[in-house]
Image 1: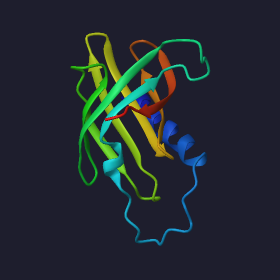
Image 2: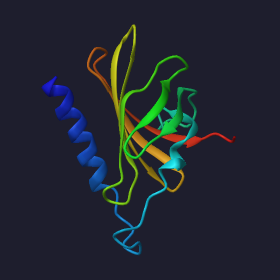
Image 3: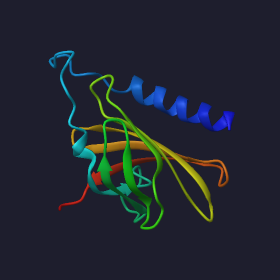
Image 4: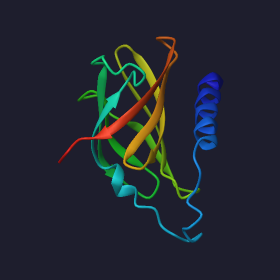
Amino acid sequence: MKTLFFASTLALCILLNFTQTDESLPNNATVDISLLKGTWKIDLSPEDTTDTNFAKMVITQVGKNSLNGYFYRDGVKIREGRINTQRRIIYAALVSGDNSGMYHTSFFYKEGLLYGSTHSIDKDFLAVWIGTKESE
């Protein structure tokens, strides 16, 4: 469990280093977390533009600091979905899982895209991905 929290924290710290807040926004500006709602096409190998290795994330509901829906494929519910906008950037983390194991995912929203990573201890991998929102 400690490894899981360490990996999730490390991934979030890396993401924080590659993003900047919009200094033009006032400190009390609100961030529109409803931008996350919808169906997202997740490119699991963004460095290879010739592959067809995609998953999906459907975010059905967002709250002040939470999100619900499905990650990877239909039926794989998001558990413990959390949102943080403390730096005026939308960050999120979630747990999902099926018969093949547990997956720990974190991502941030920037200019219409999701940039994330998914860690699986059981399958021994860390996937880096980019998500694009599908048309409604």
